[in-house]
Length: 363
Image (tube, rainbow, N blue to C red):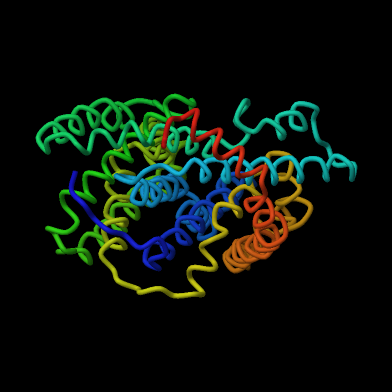
């Protein structure tokens, strides 16, 4: 296997992590509040533009994680840490809301303590599965380059082409298979292309990615305004929505790959502010997407329904996303300092980590 040293806290990847989370929060704001359907005029265009990139953000998150895992020995303690982070937030938030009298179902309360059994956070479950599979996926990188290429071509036909031509999405196995494909694709780029290519045409590729996204968004926007007049426009709207809603579709793969290519070849050094803000990106995701908290967040805290059709919709949307991210970073910083650090330094965490390492035979 080719050797490629990477720095754990390169700010180019950390900046990309922040950008990906902003894509996801914007999309949740627009999709979970009904803003895409409720808005009109320019607000409607903005809602679609800002609210259609969540699965691109998902692909970027997986690619960033894959970049650092590919070819490296899996640290079992990292899996345990991610699991504990999800469990801490989902259980605590759901329990607090239940005690405060918010409408929390029994199923939500129970599943919050077992976050991977009923997948209240689909990304977390699929990502942990990818972490568990990474030692086996890494074996592929020891193959001859030609065999790796053939495998990727085969997986592209199975994953990408099928996802582009049909609705092949949103089941656990489907997502894990898609994540595994992104892992192998990122590892292939890391070991066979990155150093040789040296960022050629990165600006053109980044601009091309933006233009592809913009074209699909404009098609989705225009077809949505005409869907009631013609069945063809209704079909085009559904198709463009499908493309943007699946991280494995060919358009999304082109966009996310080009963006990742740009950032992986952009040297930002190590910026403390960027690294600090990026450290809690996963925590921000868990906090604002804990199922019992979603309606509370949008309807009780930010009261989105009261300003969906406001002339300040764009400004209020940007402010809401910023507040969610900054607030999430603040909460997660407290958790890391007072909960995570004492826990990971405890003898119980050490024992559990060693047990998991032994089970997975990583030593």
